Length: 92
Image (tube, rainbow, N blue to C red; front, side, top):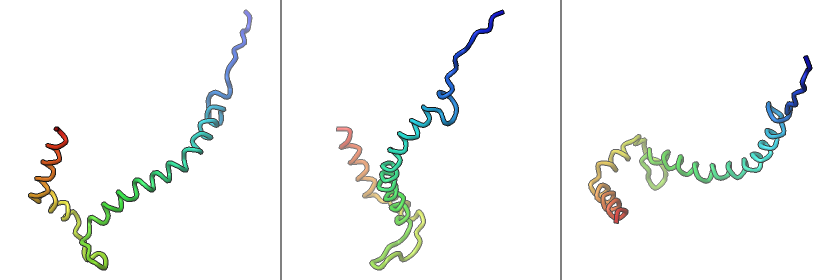
């Protein structure tokens, strides 16, 4: 019987291979802009949800409303008309 040699790629698999190093190097260039994007995009949304839970006066927050503002909005007749008009305009 003859032994046959099998060539294996040692750097292609496993942690620390050339492909993994190359991918991590690429992700390092993307990380900083994605962090800035995340802060500039998601922070205002989260902060808007935070401040919508309170009753605000001219000098700051007065009291906790919880989801009362959303309940009031969903049961407002003018808001319903505005949503209906918006949907009608988007269809045409």
